[in-house]
Length: 96
Image (cartoon, rainbow, N blue to C red; front, side, top):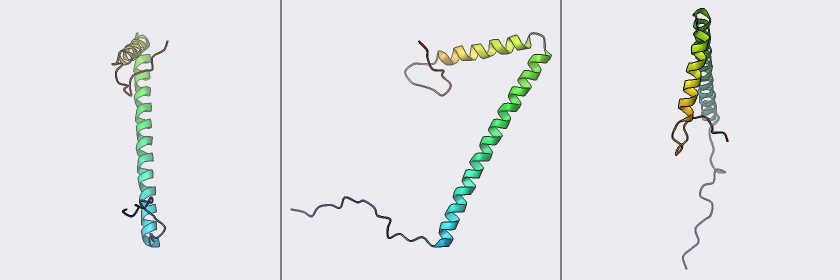
């Protein structure tokens, strides 16, 4: 009968990372998290700017608020009419 295979595939108890390399890995992790956070901030700021610009244009033009609302409703209807076979990010959940 052949020898049984070990159940543990990897053991990290014997792995030793020098302090300089551990510090470099930690700095890389923190740096990548900061980059992701800054990208998210820029994305949110750009969305707020677009919304502010749309509202300014809508309030300054005649019938702008009404057309802004109709456009938003049309986008919602188009998103809810997405294919039901697969779920997309832009699709709204169905009610009822």
